[in-house]
Image 1 (cartoon, rainbow, N blue to C red):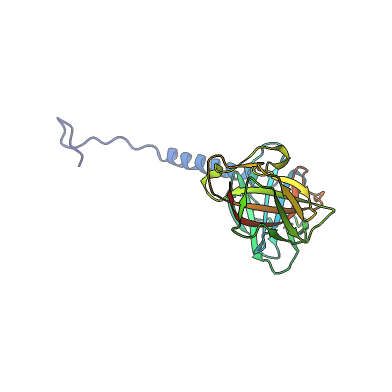
Image 2 (tube, rainbow, N blue to C red; image 1 turned 45 degrees about the vertical axis):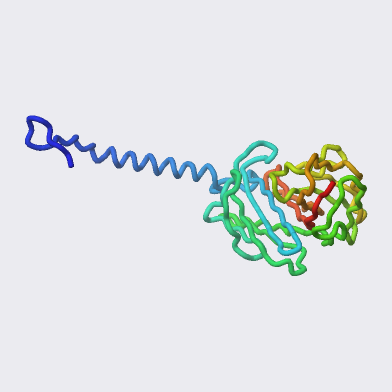
Amino acid sequence: MVRPRRGHGRAQRRPAAPRWQGHLAAWLALSAACKGDDDRNSCGVPTNEISIVATLVDNGLSLRTEVDFAVGDRSTDVDGISLCSDDELSIAGEQPNQTERNERVIYSHTQPADGQRSVEVVLTRTDGERTAVAIELPEPFDITAPAPMAKVSRSADFMLTWAPPAPEGSMRITLVEEIGNGICLETGTAEHDYKDSMGVDVDDDGNWLIPAAVIAGGARDKCDAQYRFARYEDVAYPSSFAPGGYIEGRTERFVAFVSVP
């Protein structure tokens, strides 16, 4: 309830703003929103100014393809862009899902791992320009040691094994902890720094020795962890896109184990 001012029979109202001010504010807000969209999508941007990153991952259960775009070289800190509504992207012949992640707009598609070793990504621009990329996967493999949930001693040498090998290639091995925010295990030796975000690349011979004491657990007893193995296949980057992106296929496998003193 508005109380009337003393000396007046009713409350005094503030004069209404001219109607044109409301129209101007709405127009400015709409213009700002449209400008923001234009800055972050592919509308009007030539393909040779857009870089692409596309990955296809076989994790043993499914094949997942992820694609994102940016204006310019990825070696610099550039934000991702979404595709213009008139541009069309298909992955494995289907329309992908769209999500935002870490300043990137991710287009993704997941399908069963049914033996297929290649997925085609096709971008068709507004003017009809079409670029197709077939992403190939490296050969599949199985981890044979350690066995799932095996206890692996940190104070003894341990041989990681997988099959079949690919002797001309390389295998990337990473150590990931299940819980504890990565505070249970430590790896500091350069050749065996498996907890580094890039892991350790080794010859793909089907076996790799983890020497005693290169993985430390301090005073902790048991640590739940995983070894993750990955083979990579680089795919030729399309010349129609701006340089600075990359396209790769990756075959990954992991095994959970218990690290003990």
